[in-house]
Structure formats: structure tokens, C-alpha cells
Length: 290
Ligand code: C2E
Ligand code: MG
Ligand code: MG
Ligand code: MG
Image 1 (cartoon, rainbow, N blue to C red):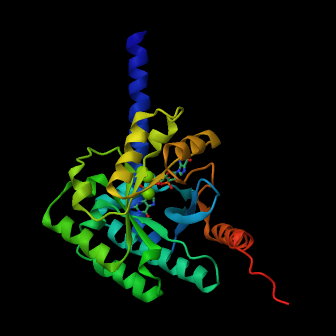
Image 2 (cartoon, rainbow, N blue to C red; image 1 turned 90 degrees about the horizontal axis):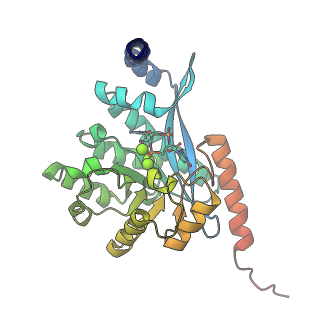
Image 3 (tube, protein in one colour; image 1 turned 120 degrees about the vertical axis):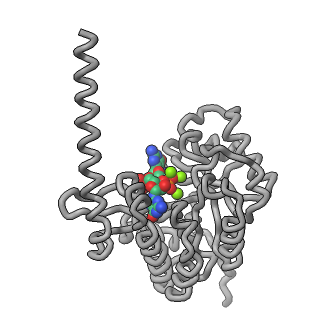
């Protein structure tokens, strides 16, 4: 019986593998056409100050609006785009689209907040990156500090000349730099001193398990950020209790379903409108002159 069960597990496993291999094959061919046909969209997830709910930024997250499959999440096509090299062109589109969108909102008189964009390691090491970022800023007219680039620990682990120079040039352009999924890589803390990054993003896996104010990992990351003079934001905050604990531990910024899901542009614009009203209401009133 055990043997049979084992064999059918194996069958399920191979069926699943085949399905994924097929998807990979069809995606490999489809991604380039999808880029040409404008099938990618950005959703924007709010980032907030926990204490008063102030909107402090958005993270742009790419989706594929597939004509048959519907909205395909990035985990299903980013790795394939990385393998095929298409991530460079796709990543360029993401940076340009995020800058354009942000500048459009600003021109409409909406609050100025940075939009964060994820960089893949392949894209980071491609020689076109600096020109892409500088070009997207110049073309959109967006101020550099309204663009944030999310790097990963694996990118910074390679402490070679190219990595050092790229990070320095990006910083010289004036964009903000954060480290995504912080704590999940083989953190060699040395790189934190070497690179001019601005902010650590506490990975959601640590936030998920957060249930007491003595959480040693979250406490350590927050302390590390403070001691190095870096900002810190928690990802994947799903409950009011997690938000309360984070604030108590000294992490004032958060992103997660508790505060807002990633939203299509029209809905993200609604969040900006709401923030505009909130800021006007909380602004100190000038005394009325008679
Ligand atoms: P990430 O950069 O760490 O983004 C956070 C992911 O967590 C997003 O998934 C977001 O929707 C999800 N999330 C946010 N709040 C919560 C929460 O409260 N609970 C839970 N369970 N999840 C939450 P998404 O959009 O599916 O993106 C997955 C990953 O794909 C991203 O992880 C990022 O690594 C990658 N990605 C997304 N867009 C891009 C892109 O434009 N370029 C590159 N290179 N990678 C991207
Ligand atoms: Mg990210
Ligand atoms: Mg993350
Ligand atoms: Mg991630």
C-alpha cells in the first residue's frame, strides 16, 4: 500500500512538473510578445506611517494581464524572464512606467511620495541599468528622490567593483535605495557598512511570526537599522496587533494587507486623493484675519 501511495504521489509530482514545464515553455515565448503588446500592468501597494496612517510611499508590483489566464502574479513569470534575459527589457518598462505614473499624479496636484521598484540581480548587473534609471527620470521629469529602488541581499553579497560602483552611481543620481526581504539572505553584515543604502525592509516571514514584543529577530533588525542610521519598514503586516507591536519595537513604517493590498493605478490614485484630504485636514490652520 505504501508503495502504491508512493507511486501515485510520484505521478502527481510528475504531472505537476509537466504542467509547470509546459507553462514555462509557453511563457518563455509569450513574455516578449506580451511586453510588445502592452500586457504588463503595475499595481501599487501603499506604505504607511503606523502611528497616524500617513501615506509615505507605494511599492510598484508587476502583473501580467494575460488574455486567457487573467492576472498572472510575478512569481510565475519573473524567474522565467530572468532566465531568458527578458527581465532587462521588462525591468526597464517597470522603471519607466512607475516614474511616468508618479509624475502624472504629481502634475495632478496629488501628494508627492516615492514609488519603489524591485530590481532583479540580472537587471542590476546589466550595463544598461544606470542609463535606464537616469533616462526614466529625465524623460518623466520625476525628482530622483521620488524613485526608490529595492535591492536584495544577494545583489549586495557580491561585493565586487561593479556592484560597488553601480550602487554608488545610483546613489549619486539621488534615488533612494532599500534592501528588500531583509534577513532572508546569507546576510554578511559587512556589506551594510560598505553600501550607501537608505532603508531595510523587514521580510514578511519575520512579521508573520511576530506575536510578542520580545521577538528577537525583528528587534535585532530594527536595532541594526537604527544603529546604522537607516530607515526600516516592515513588510507583510496583516493584523492590527502586528502593527501595534512593530510600533512598540520602534519600527514606524509598514506595508501589508492590514493597510492596503496592491492596487491598480486608478484605485491607488484614490488613495492619493484621500491622503491629500487627510493632509489638508491635519495641516495647522492659519488664524483668520479680519
Ligand atoms: P516583494 O518585492 O517582497 O513584494 C512583496 C510581495 O508580498 C508582493 O507579492 C505583495 O503583494 C505581497 N504582500 C504584500 N503585503 C502582504 C501581506 O500582508 N501578506 C502577504 N501574504 N503578502 C503580502 P507579489 O506582488 O506577488 O510579488 C512577489 C514578488 O515578485 C515580489 O516580492 C518581488 O520580489 C517580485 N516582483 C514584483 N514586481 C517585480 C518587478 O517589477 N521586478 C522584479 N524584478 N521583481 C518583481
Ligand atoms: Mg519588493
Ligand atoms: Mg519583500
Ligand atoms: Mg520577495
